[in-house]
Length: 294
Image 1 (cartoon, rainbow, N blue to C red):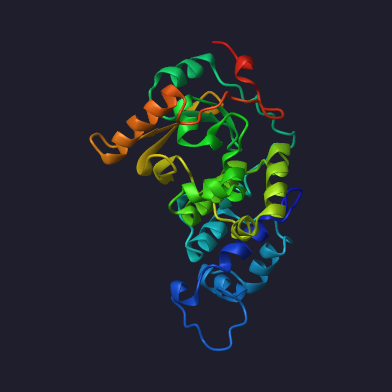
Image 2: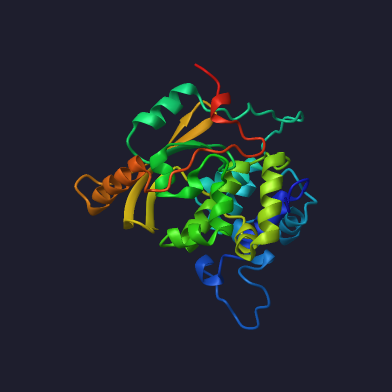
């Protein structure tokens, strides 16, 4: 991971966000002969009411304990929203020195039952967007939702997944910023390191978006897709936390064209024409028959 094992995460974040704010957005004259994108360090300092020297120390990692008030003032200058401000303040929160241990990501038996009976495309994912379990309709909806796949990897590296999203540019930006939010302080987590390293080497678009340090929640929303069999659909996507995994469900508005297409897709999945395959394990991900029992 490009910024794991890095004790200047705060400085990198401030610089990345500063470069995305134009002078006009900050309410100051742009002037001529500007040689840097976004705001200058001294402009951020002036607008936040701190000295330019102190702000320089923050960006260069020479001061690692700024006050909450200072970071909130800088956050206002940089136009951070509530999620981004929380992420920024989390960088100076007291840290537990011992390494955090996360429970293995195992799918509760009741979720396997739900997937089999819900009648909608549904799957279970882990913190790094690994698909841990899914139903046949989810696989008919997208073969990249088979257990063992990784949704972020598919989105960045699989041409079929990119064509599947009618607004791939927005989807990629949303997923990457949500992934950074998921990481939080767990910058040394081996799974995160592995995935970011792979994508940084393989995808120029990932490198560019990762360097922005965007963070956001990806709790739900609308999926606008172009299915190769039934055509375009606009679906709601909701997420539900169950123990330490996430249940994701797609559904359409009642009576809509997309609902009719989902029903058609369900009939294809039922007789095998939708392309569902037997779920396959991948690497360290748990197999369905290894899921914990309630």
